[in-house]
Amino acid sequence: MRITPSILNADLSRLAEEIARIPSSDMVHLDVMDGHFVPNLTFGIAVVESIRANTSLKLDAHLMIEDPDLWAPRYAEFVDSVTFHVEAARDPALILKEIKARSTRAAFALKPGTSIESCADLIPLADMVLIMTVEPGFGGQSFMHEMMEKVRRTRALIGEEKSIYLQVDGGVSLDTIGEAAAAGADTFVAGSAVFKAEEPDAMVRLLREKAHASHAQ
Image 1 (cartoon, rainbow, N blue to C red):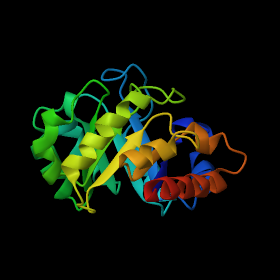
Image 2 (image 1 turned 90 degrees about the vertical axis):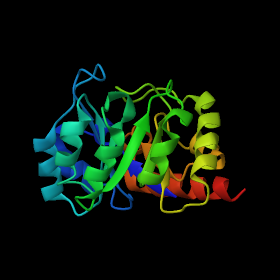
Image 3 (image 1 turned 60 degrees about the vertical axis):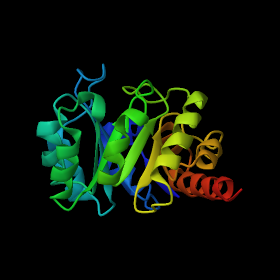
Image 4 (image 1 turned 45 degrees about the horizontal axis):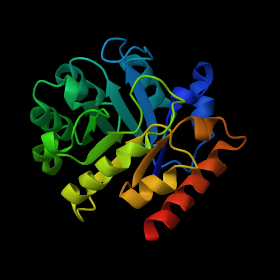
């Protein structure tokens, strides 16, 4: 069970200090938004490069941008995992290959309205599949419980291949992580739940414990 806090809900004016507050994280989730693929605008490759220079934690870049065919390999130079949206990609199989060529984990993401069956052929090429449990673009949204059936179908397609992670992103908290873990997810993006907690790193550990307990049931 892996917890990857999203800095979208951190104090962006003091990112280095915010990231230093979550040393127990398995990865730090970087939401890159361009204001076109999604309506929100966050930061780009220069900020990601700066974050890389200021932390030893693993970085997980989630590209909610147009033209990931161009940009995903570039982000792969600075992070440990790159996720792009199949809805924006011209050749998702090639993107996965190019990310991996840079010794970076390669992942694809699906919006709530995109079926996993339409992307089943990509699963063997990927290191992770991300199922969005909110509409991408903004933090602090409510968890979409109806996406759990999609998580279960994705888990069935992945099978027992432990090298391929199944990540959920959106509305993950102590109230919802158990449901996602029971459905088959093993990697969890949590933003508000972590950075709005009084002790963010303690929340990371609590979330992991809750996921482990629910996965074992």
